[in-house]
Image 1 (cartoon, rainbow, N blue to C red):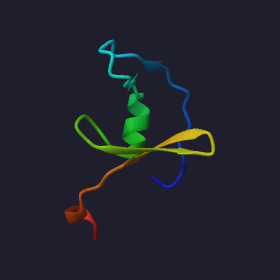
Image 2 (image 1 turned 90 degrees about the horizontal axis):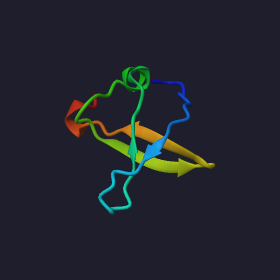
Image 3 (image 1 turned 180 degrees about the vertical axis):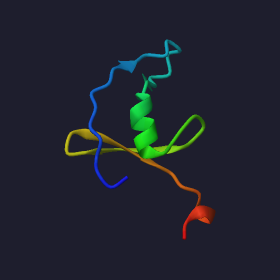
Amino acid sequence: MSDSVRRIVICQDPGDGSGDVIIDLPSDVLAEMNVGLGDLLTIERVDGSIVLKPIRDADTKP
């Protein structure tokens, strides 16, 4: 993915007291990022936005 995909999503409290949040990412965003269930993502705050990037296995890098 070479371009950014910007979406506004709702953070949900899982209700377990952990302080974690659940974010449902739309299927078109997952497809654009080429990720799915079980894939790992990094999360970073950049200029007031949350940036998610897939973590790719080092063995699959050219």
